[in-house]
Image (cartoon, rainbow over all chains, first blue to last red; front, side):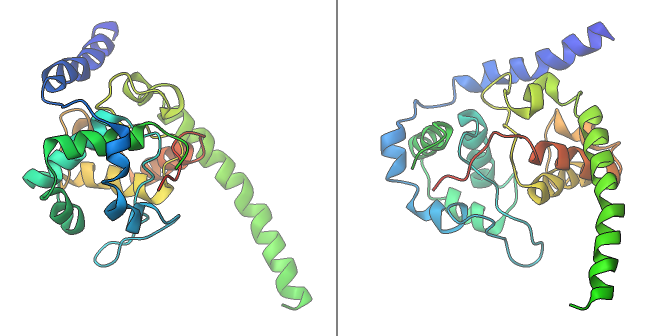
Amino acid sequence: MKLFRLTITCIPLAFAALSAAAWADGDAAAGRQKTWTCEGCHGIADYRTAYPEVYPVPKLGGQSAGYIIKALQDYKSGSRKNTTMGAIAAKLSEQDMADIAAYYAAGAGN
Amino acid sequence: MNKQSVIVALLMSAIAAPVFADDYAAGKEKAATCAACHGPEGNKPITPDVPRLAGQYYEYLVHSLKAYRSGVRENAMMTPMAKPLTDKEIKDVAWYFSKQTGLIHKY
């Protein structure tokens, strides 16, 4: 069981080590200028997606930077599917993604 | 609202309240596994590529876990974690994380 737990812990660490090099350094202030589009949905409390499945779009304040970058990369590549996010991420550069992630990861305050 | 419907509503909430408490406790217990990567209360991910869960919307968490379970969303860690979960377990875990203080609404 201990070995299992250790393995479970090590897998994401290995992923992080592999993917860290792929991330650009984010600039939160620059990110602020790139989140106007995001605000239309993520900036409204309890804002919901529409057809075919209805659920509130996720809160992003305080979210892990690496996770936001990964989500945007996956939406862009199409490996994670969402019509709206796919269209938005398609226009973002790696630097844009890093900046946006830095802004949201910084947490509280607008 | 007449008197009768008020009484019915009160009775219903009295019955429902302990059920929520049970769901929270069940979710908390189930969430112990999640803490290995997402941190205590889903609030301190061990690496930056792991999302914070504390305070996330309940329905979004349910949506995400179901997407991992069905295979619509794929992840080397989350797919095997979500596969064995029942609908009830997904709801309990999501309820527990949604009740923690963490993520905020930022615009």
